[in-house]
Length: 605
Image (cartoon, rainbow, N blue to C red; front, side, top):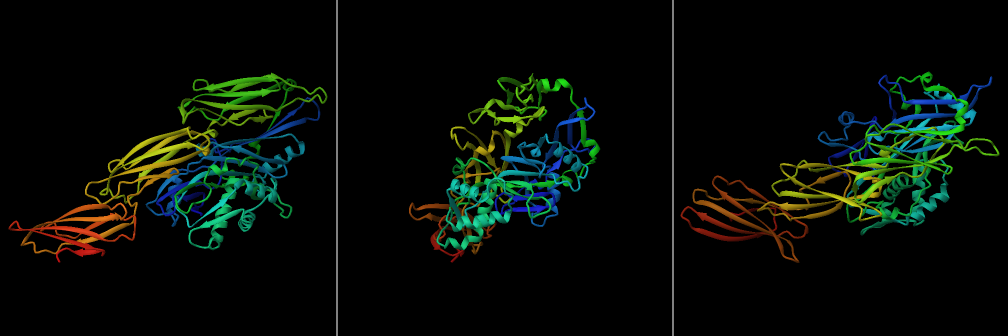
């Protein structure tokens, strides 16, 4: 199911199919620029000039990329897009996971980086090259940005809410993944049509089955194949820019990820027949180098720089570590960075009052045989929270390794400020309900005890709320909402409690059931009649005999027809009872009872 709408550089996703809420996101990454519009692209070549023929040791290519979008840009794009309703509500897309991959085919392996989960998915990409030919090739590519086969491919994961479907997919996803590994391997560049083909094969081989209610599942083959392709691409593949033998130039495509699927069955991947679901979906913003720097003052002279290494450079292993953020989230107490080089372990600590760069400096490890210096340093950083988040007091990165002389810690890749918007729909009928109590709960997939929740009281005077919650590793959480409706007096509506999965948009509707309506027409001689009281009763459950009631009052000054509108959970129950009291000018009272299954009634006769 594809709810995406694109307009130039901004993409829109319908929060729930048919709703008035749309999420927006940038469709292509861009390079950050400084105040002079010079792009943050740097290529540093490190060499020794001690001899007549300089020796190049290594080079570092660094780029600062982002998915730049704003409310103003989204509003402008929406105005130019006929598929977006003029009164649509626009919200920034909330991300639960995000990566950016630097791709330079035939010069270096694909380099995948975790990005910030907020802050426009900012990513500081650094790549090291040691081969002299590759180093010079990158220099040549940077001098011709318009044709350079350099690309950055983002994969951003978000949550999509889906209504009950006409079919659903069922599979042992670990078996599906094994089939993909056998079919593609991890290094092949494949395209969307390849994933469509394998989806059709998986269904035909019954590794994935289509479930449907009261119909032949084969009727949904086309839609099921498209749905499965979306699931496979999101869960198992990553976007890349690579070379294939039959094409003269590299192309955008996908590669199978080497991942663990042991927990995949704990999440919902497909829409369900009988219930609302929330599934993970992905966007794949990609751009060539020419597009990345197109809005900047790019000059290769400013990008490439040469640095002379002194003799003592190889006597010590030195790393400069710094945070990418200029300030810590209010709930982060400190950041601990642990580095390991050989048997040496060294902790470095950042805090709100100590954000400056830190230096790791130890004697170099020299191989006794090759006499070469050992470069790899393992490191891991941990965030410690002031207040627990669902019982969690800290969040740690994976154990990483670097051969570079600088480390930039993106602490925002470990947590997200997930932003919920709670709002009644634009045409919410406040005559039916006095208030709605809303509870939002964030539950950890593996540890159900690790949950956090908050209540909100929605009323006509306060029809919306916003809630921002800090979540470490947000893709490991599921979100649910409980809505408890309190009905107004003298209204034929059921006080409902809904418990549903949710995404970032918590929309509250007043039309929870089909309505059984009856137009009541009072055609009386008001010169003789003082007032008419009508008590209307509708039985909405024939087993419990539960009923809904509403009273109407008519007089000479209030003689227009009235509409009785009651919740109708069972569409086969149509009969409505009317108890009518007619009072004339002399104080005489007439009682009569009517029953009808029509949509309007003249209570005079």
